[in-house]
Image (cartoon, rainbow, N blue to C red; front, side):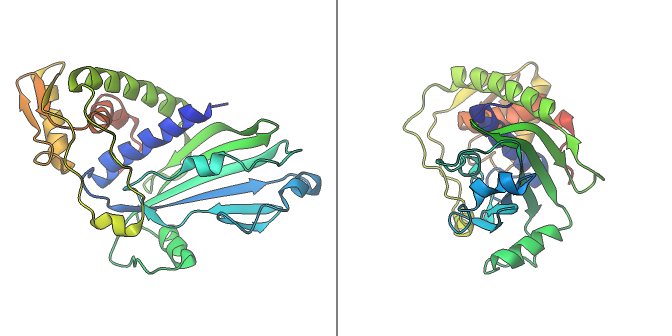
Length: 276
């Protein structure tokens, strides 16, 4: 079983790498996502404790096939995985009920409209030409939801491939990058307000950095140059005052932003998760 906090952080890292490797943007959101939860009781007896759940908070369907549907939102903010995995309290007797959490992402195109109904938006996602899917598989038990395996597919691949170990390794790589960046960046100022993920939030420009300029030593000058080029491609070069200086990267990047870029360059990109 993957602990919830590990899964939440793994989810955030995956979505950051999606924006780096697929959207090619951290300055502006370019993709639309939808989050779905399917509960699949094996027997009618297993389904009984679920009977009262539909009707609020995104639940729909029957006790034998429940769905939790989040509205279409952008990846300007991360899907609230905690709302799905923090299963409603007061539900007892749930054992071995299969659970699938599905995240679909696709770049916005000319056919997408912000006034789509939930059903219209869902159909737009399903027919998108460049669809990416992350699937979390687990079971419900006495201690709540237990995620066991994670699968991923991109529009150029024919089927899901398991990425549980890949993403857990990626999280370790991100932790190493963040620890290194944080030592150089310093504490910064007060925390920023997280975007709410609504479609109008697409029009809100990225806020100015709260960090003073700092220097990150790289393994060699070529790595510093590659990081600077990546930041340029991601729309951060001018906004965060990024430049390579020999074997160092100078910037006012938020530590989270730079940890995302460094971990993608050193580890995430080699996983081949995303294709343009």
